[in-house]
Image (tube, rainbow, N blue to C red; front, side, top):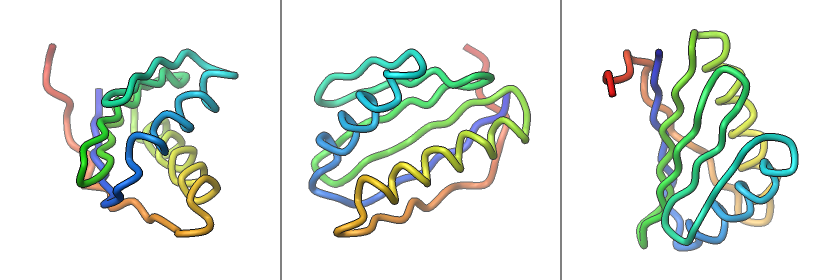
Amino acid sequence: MIQQHAQAATPEASRIMQRLCYHFGRKVQAQCNEKRGTVVFPGGVCDMQATPAGLRFTLNADDENLLASGREVIDGHMALFTRKAPITLSWSAPSQAPVR
């Protein structure tokens, strides 16, 4: 499994994360509370964490193509949900996910 991280500084991290989870949950499995969210995409999982300083994403996928696809979905929805005050995610380089 391959993993990639992203983060965005925003004081509205919890609200944005909850909107993302609610929206994604209409098509795929998603769960969320005020501080953590998880979305299960085909071939991957995105874990989100909201803090007072911002929103952190950890995207795990079976291969590079699925990782890129998940990243595009997340980036596109972040652009949509933050269009009044755009937030761009800064993604890390892909790496091997730790074994659980």
